Amino acid sequence: MDDNELVARILDGDQLAVQTLHERYAKKLFNYIYSQTNHYHDSEELLQDIFFKAALHLSLFRKQSSFKTWIFKIARNAIIDYYKSAYIRNHFVEFESHNSEQHEAADATAIRHEQVKFIHHAINELPLSYRTVIYLRYIEDFTLKETASVMGKTIYSIKALQKRAQKMLKDDIGVEVLENGQRII
Image (cartoon, rainbow, N blue to C red; front, side, top):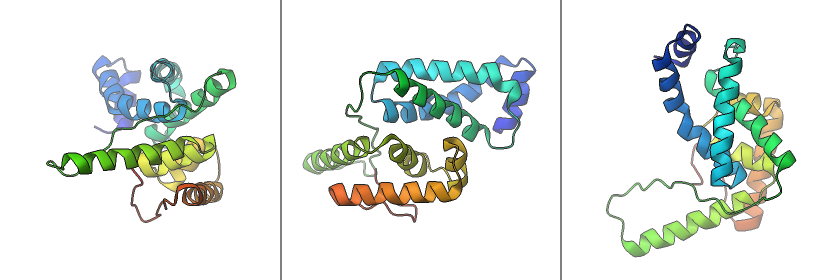
C-alpha cells in the first residue's frame, strides 16, 4: 500500500494505517534528525513533535509532492527551530554503517569503522545546509527535486549547495562525493 492510500485511510480513522506509516518513516526520520542535531534525546523529542505536527496537519497534505518529501520538510523545519533555540551544537554523530561483508576481519572492521567516524565527523563540521543536502542526497537517496522541496529551494540551488558541500569535504579531508550514486558512507 502506498503512502497516499495510507494517508486516506488515516483520515478515515484507520489506526493500523497510522502504525504502518509511522513504522515506514520513524527510523529514517530519526536518523535524519540525529544526523542534524547530534543529540539522541533531542532527536527522540523532535521525532515525536514531527509526527504530532504531521498528524495535526495531515488533512492539509495536498499530494503535490510525496508524503516522504512532505514529512521530511516538516522535519527540516523542526530542526531549524531546534537550532534557533539550542545551546549545544556540533557533537559527533555516529551513523549506522552497512557491513557489506559478513565475515570481515577484525582489523579491517576497525580500520573501516575509523574511516566512517572520520567521514561522519567531517560531515558534522559542515554548515547545516551542506550537511542537510549531503544527508538527503546520499544517505536518504532523495532526488534533486525531492531535496529542493524539503529544503524549500530550487533544484539549481540544491545543485550549487551540493557542489559546495562536495568541494568542502574534498578540500577538508580529501573525500570526494560522487554524483553517480556512490555513497560516502
